[in-house]
Length: 132
Length: 63
Image (cartoon, rainbow over all chains, first blue to last red; front, side, top):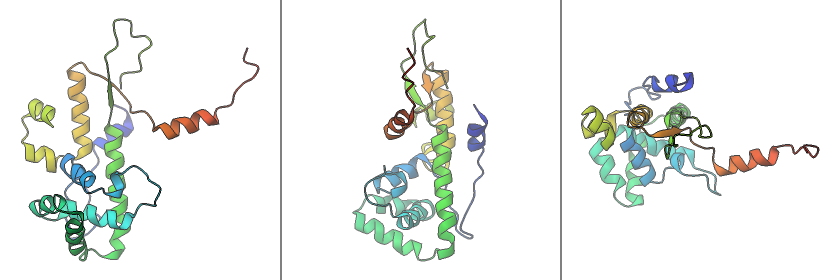
């Protein structure tokens, strides 16, 4: 494990919004971000991503009561956005930038730990890619 | 998630909602290694690879 990976692994929890405790980016919350087509986890498209809405929806997914979040994420996109908007009204505007930085840092940390799995090379593995 | 639960005994709720994704991926990597899988760093997106190839200088006198 190289230094970058070790540092990412030990990344401390942080809360960019005082008084609002965010759950960590996790496999469950990542699945909800993907389900709700959050711009932070979507491949780049032609249109510029709406990072403000994406950050507020991220905060909703990671700070609102879990049962409410799961229910909203499995309703229509309009219901989800309405719930996220209602929740995000309590977030001060000056905390949006630190929130976006926190989201990006979490996604980078996760990206640094991901690996691809290849078929195991045979006995003569001198041409195999390095095992990470 | 199944692999992590099997290897650690951690409950589903903890793995899904409390364990940071970067740590889950690191533990999954360990489990893959432990079970003999061959893992490599993810490739760069195809667009980056094409850009890198396009930026390479071709030495016409290489032969």
